[in-house]
Image 1 (cartoon, rainbow, N blue to C red):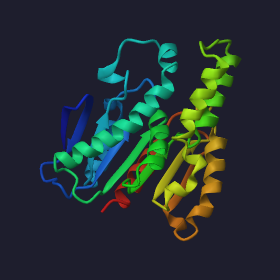
Image 2: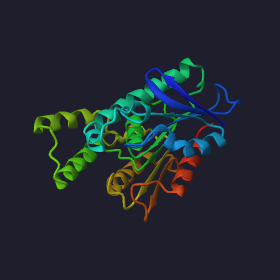
Image 3: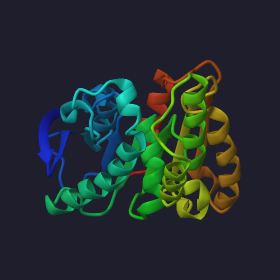
Image 4: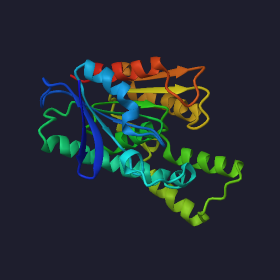
Length: 254
């Protein structure tokens, strides 16, 4: 297994592959969580490369090698900007894969944990070239998660520097990336959800309720949609969840 630290455009990433991989090798872009960084997901890459999948682990804006030393609270004020930026950068990485002749047949999957799972959900709305996805602790509904976050800030006595008009403008922008508003965009592509039932950061119920709604859009191919719930897990993916996500991705890529 070869781990190369590279810069694709303005995006620092780890490129994990083997010597015998070529342009016909399937690819997974795996996205890290909030306050995390690319190298923290090498265990996902290890499993995928072992199954014959090339992996890209990019750093999100203001994270990892792109850090500007912000506190977690300061970072949280940029949360949705980071998410939307990552959605656009996934397309940039896809184009770079094509330019570098590392992706011939669009055998590509997108996956991530927490913020990375949220980005993955947005990508499923925007990009029909995604063949398969794994959403771990992610929220398909951007607008509902944003509302929940504001409630949590208020509950903790944090006053955000946002007017009601700015909140409304943000919600209107997020709606353009909110796949829960257009579930037909899943187009019966193979998608796995994993979520801990005790998650207080990205609430379990919203994601599971969306999955129940989504099932009617998979009536022709119900096997392409799967939800794994962990009754004991909070906001952390279990080993079983990690193995299930990587197995799903490898299984649905040629």
